[in-house]
Every structure is written in structure tokens, then in C-alpha cells.
Amino acid sequence: MEQHAPVGLTDAERKARLAALRRSYERSSLDEADLAPDPVTQFQRWFDDAVDAGIVEPNAMVLATATADGVPSSRTVLLKGVDERGFVLFTNHGSRKGREMLANPHASLTFPWHEMDRQVIVQGEVEQVDRDETEEYFRSRPHGSQVGAWASEQSSVVPDRAALDARYDELGARWPEGTAVPVPAHWGGFRVRPVSMELWQGRSSRLHDRLRYRRAGGGWVIERLAP
Picture 1 (cartoon, rainbow, N blue to C red):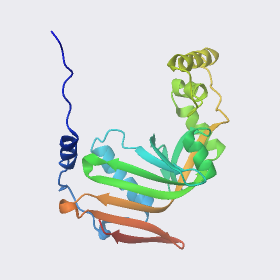
Picture 2: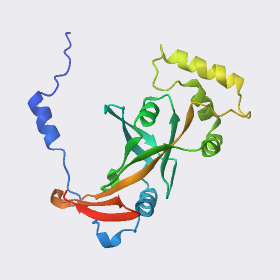
Picture 3: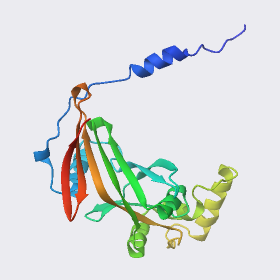
Picture 4: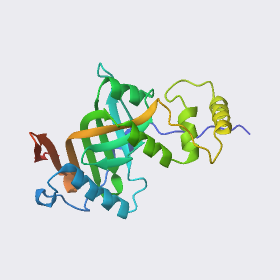
């Protein structure tokens, strides 16, 4: 019996389905009087809320960077530190994001906590984390992740998965479980020092609450933005 592939949606049906994907945000509101005086303290409050709410990987953030001539790129990475100095992530310096942050030291971070109808957007200046802090974090990583930092020439083209696995096995034999893996010279941390941070809280009728901290002189001003 002749079999036919299932008929897919028409372009018009896809367009209609996409347009219908919407919901109303009714969970909460955000008022200027509720905010901490500085953005990092406020971020930590919302981050604690996200952890307590059971958000999966609440430290996952979209990191946006750009080349020296302004060509953008973005990817999801993990936040690994935050304090009054800023937001820290670690990566291979030769990766696309590493190269771009070295060439153009400005970045944006987005924390998309959809389950809470919230997001946080940080814009800031990028600096490298000092080597002592990098080495301390590297030693806290699982052994496999330490070996993986050596095995992967991040963002480079590889012939196939087998080549990557073979490289990992080779280095795993050099540094078996229980031995110290040296910190790669090409691997380290970057800190995004905020110059602005926006808190977004979904509201009904698309009239969302958007409050932004903006660095001004030696302090911060808080501004409400139209949704």
C-alpha cells in the first residue's frame, strides 16, 4: 500500500497559530517603593525568589556580545558569581563570546524567568576576573568539567563527535579522577559590571511594569519605562 507523508500546516495556519500564542500576566506587580537602593541587592532578592519558586536553572542567562565592528551574537550561559562588582561567568577565551568580550568589552545579560512572569536585563562593561578567582572556581568544578575545558577548543570546527570524545579520553587518561587538573591559560572568568539593570514584571493588557536602574555619577537612579 502506498504511504503518504502527513500533510503539514499551511503557511497561513502557521501564521495564525503563532499569532494566537499569548497569555495574560496576572501574577504580580512592581512598584518603585519595593526596590532596593542598588541593582545587585535587588537582583539577589529576585534571584532568591526564583530559587524558592523552583525555577529550573535560575542562573541560566542569555549573554549577548558583539564583535569590534558591532556584529552581535548571543547564547545561554550560567551565572557563577554576583556581588557589588557585577555578574561573573567563565569560558574559554578563544570561544566566540570570549573573543568578542576581549575585543568589545560591553555585554548584555537576560535572565528569563518565564514561570514568574519576570525577566532581568543587565547591560554593562566587561572585565576579566583575576587569576586567583578563576583558579578557585576551576578547582570547584567536577573533574569531568575540568578535563572538558582542556578537551574542547570552544567554537572551533571539529570533524565529528568521535574526535571530541577521543580528545577527552586522551586527556582523561593524562589526568585521571583524583588527580589535579591544571587550570588552562586560555580559560577564565569575565565580569559584567552593570551600568543599567531593568526589572520586567508581566502585567495584564500588556501594560507591564518596567523599572530600570541607571548608573549616574556615584549612585543609581530608578526610572519607570513604558512597556
